[in-house]
Length: 312
Ligand code: NAD
Ligand code: UDP
Image (cartoon, rainbow, N blue to C red; front, top):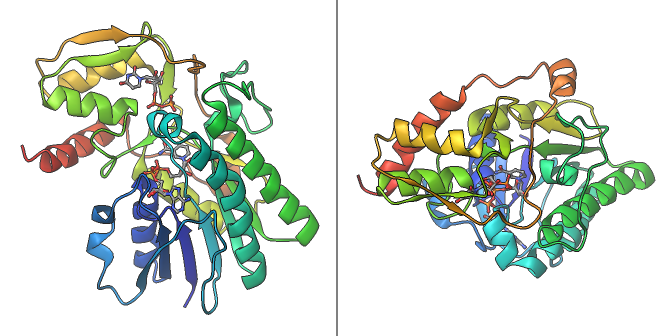
């Protein structure tokens, strides 16, 4: 039986990954320190004989007994609000945490997969973003703690691949949403849904004309699984190219929730990317993957989950 270690396994994406690997008959070791995650996300997996939880900060030496076939490094604050509050932890988990998880993968002769991000492209000057674009990142700006940690993590992963011949994967994840995102996580979709369901003002930053392209979580998990089982060592974008302005996204959420909320405009955060859209030709051609769930369908499922958690 294959054994996989998932760091950040009690977070939004990590918990969906734990479920996916359990359903594919893997043994799953979920490692997390709950800095932005929660035991609630994995409570339903406790009691499964193929699921094990280890409370650990992965910036420290990682010890795992027995064999490990795959290491997926997902631990990191991911919401801009979180990494602005936790700048040093974010830099440490992207740098030291990546080093520790790569070291473990090497010792166990495991395949390593890094959760990277569209943020490595920064505020992009090329649109849409393909994997060969090197990005436009402000290293000393407030978002630099996340962007540069992930860029370092990619460089470290490629160094282990080239120097140690480690089998590695890098997924560049574009904005993904779905059930289990924290109600007040601060990212646009959870913020707008919570505000809309409570009939509170919807906080659009700037003029709302900046764009994002949002992917439903089940599509992302499917793409990551396919990438892991492929033989591609260089970065692959996974995301949904369906691009929308943040203002239109807010309006769509108001409509889908039948909300009475009004839109209020707040200051645009520093270095907020003006546009973002993945070029997914590479994922299409080498993984035979593309997203299947529309934004609307995904939002409806996410709103249902938020209603349950808000006890509505
Ligand atoms: P999340 O905050 O829900 O999950 C991150 C998890 O990592 C949390 O459970 C947190 O407690 C854990 N963690 C953080 N530091 C840790 C440490 N030092 N030791 C152990 N555990 C630690 O965020 P998410 O949206 O699920 O993101 C997961 C990963 O995917 C992150 O690496 C993020 O950069 C990447 N990513 C996510 C998105 C997205 O749209 N959701 C986009 C790009 C990249
Ligand atoms: N945003 C917003 N209101 C909010 C939260 C976010 O207008 O309450 C904007 C944010 O400025 C950015 C976009 O929505 O332009 C996406 O933000 P998010 O935090 O979801 O992810 P990012 O892609 O910036 O990492």
